[in-house]
Amino acid sequence: MELLDKVIDSAQEVLKIIGPGYGESVYEEALAHELRIRGIAYERQRNFDVLYKGYAVGSARADLIVNPVWAGAGGEELVLELKTTKNIQDAHKKQAQVYMASLNIPNGAVLSFSKEVLVETVSKPERKFETRPIAPKKCKGGEITVILRDAANEVYQYLGTEILYYGSQNEGKKIYTNAIGVELRLNGIEFVEGTYNILYKNQVVDKYTFDFVFSDRIAANIFVPKKDVSLEEEIDELSLYKKLFNFKKCYLVSFPNKENGQVTVAEV
Image (tube, rainbow, N blue to C red; front, side):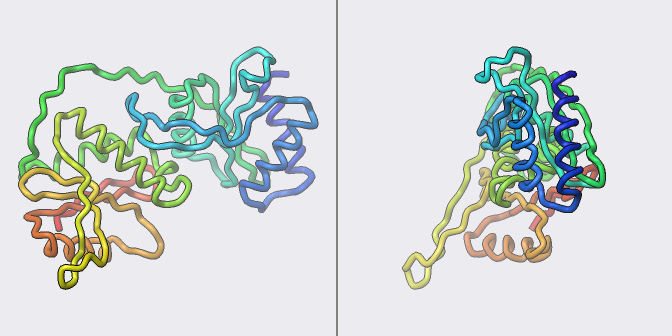
């Protein structure tokens, strides 16, 4: 029996015994136990650097690596991403592909515990990156909307939506923000992350950070859709800090929360 077939058979045993409806962590624990009973080597929550076009933009953890090299069983490792969704979506497969590319593991699959065990195999993407001399250039006000939208769309197509909500919300946002930074630098755009003091009668009472500060007093922030804060509220907040710190223009880059959505760039 092939390795993935053995994993699927193990997952079906788990679902038969405990049934559907639990969270991912329950099924991960149960599947790991079943693999252990069957003598199938695995590694849980392997830490690794998430790579965007060869650059580390954050860190993540893979649910399961089946047949890890250190077990000495021979053959190739398998990245296994676990879900509890009714359907396996492209975003789930794209997440696995990012993990596989980052870990340099050619084999992967998404496995979902629903009313039945759903499985989609995933191929490691072939990603060749152009190497070219990068001439630094400053961002002009009229160009920044297009530059940010192109960079964000490139990142969105590469990473998908699942990693956007990886870990705590800030973890996912940081990965995407760093990836946009890579995209900007690959296109020669100069920027810094800018943190500014909020003063009350010359006393620092708080700090505020812009994700990107360009030349000519232009800044941009990344917005991750979330339940407790709307896009309009985020725009209002950015408008407040634009005025407080005397920026000429500010932009808010918003990612969609579903696959095949649209990246938007709003001037504040």
